[in-house]
Image 1 (tube, rainbow over the protein chains, first blue to last red):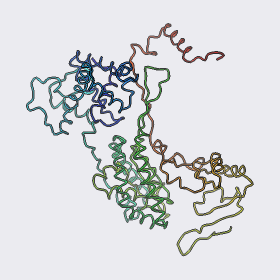
Image 2 (cartoon, one colour):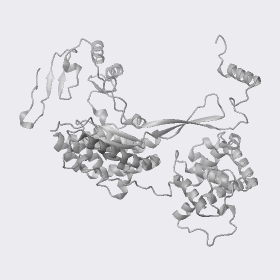
Image 3 (cartoon, rainbow over the protein chains, first blue to last red):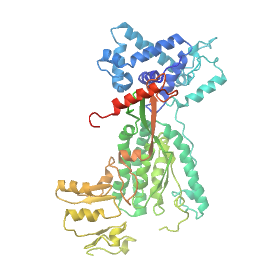
Image 4 (cartoon, chains in turn red, purple):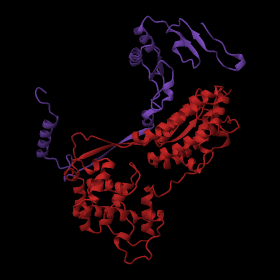
Length: 387
Length: 165
């Protein structure tokens, strides 16, 4: 039998408390809940029992009886959920402890039954393959439905690995390889950009393509993880601030204290503020469902994809940097077209992040999505205005 | 003009800080973006006129109110057509990362920085779920008169207004 969506939601919430999974909107918890469901599908009796338990656990009356607050499990804050579950685990009533252990074991054994989890903890799997394999040793199918499935073989395994690519906590984040822009398209290069409009357009297309490729992985990261990597970028920027200040000073003639205060400080300060705010602001939000009491509504915030910034010369570092920081925190890739008057300051925002940083930092560069497109190319073609 | 109005040759293409007294709102200097250190002063009679003149502009990015009274500053700030207003200073709101930066009217679109700066680069998706699966949902076929009556009663109870409504 399969669970109702309410039961699955409860199970998903329980998975989240039992296993360290990334926060929403990451679907790992849902996948794990589905895997538990699929696994029990082979045993209708166990499945029915768990379904009944899930109904009980998420009933306001249950919480009222055991914790004193008429609040559904799925509506509690994570901290309260933990406290409440601890109450079940250590209850004086044997039945409650049994229920807790049953739920915990079915979730954990499903979790640790997954090959990629075993690989992550260094477990190489059962000593010898068992035949016929008991149902809990078989690859788990996300997606539910009829349980079972054939013995572990190449076909079913491939199917499995395909479905679990969302298991990010275990699978390392693969960095899309960024090819460097052609020399003529890079404002940071010493070669002046070519006057050919078509090659400039190609360079922009290529830059957007790279940003798009990088964004796929970057946008899929949980906001907290993006914040962690942006923090590393902040560190790299401050380590190299003198260099950035010199570039801005040389290009605009503005005093160094302004280059530092109006540009570097502001961008780094924004990153610092967003490290705290972004996970809060971009968190999915439950909203009322009007009179449809059996439905629930959630608002989720997703990135657009690739954000292009065409920026002026007056604040050559912060004007492109500020929107790009916001775009990156929100999960977008980005392409900056700095002013043709101050091409180096604008691109130094990208460079200070990509080239300087050690490998751990460069990874945060979903900002590898942060590549800079050629000076004048993003505009209508070649411009002759250059100081 | 009381000061400036020339380029500083010795320092390259740099314009000297320039102050223009007795400017009028109609001057091109006021109607367009100067993008330089040029400050035209328009004399006004009172607060009322000051707000009216300031709000007659096409632009509305960052406004500044200078006054000794904090209450007056706040009052004028509330009335100015601008995306940002700074009382007794200029532009320092730019250094406050949780303040949304952006203008109204011809001064740009959208916001960067602040919570709004994150939402600006996000697209919201509304995801609805069924919490409790009913055997038959309200608008699933087949319809029936009894269901209509049920909905009618529900409309009365849940949406009707008692009394003269």
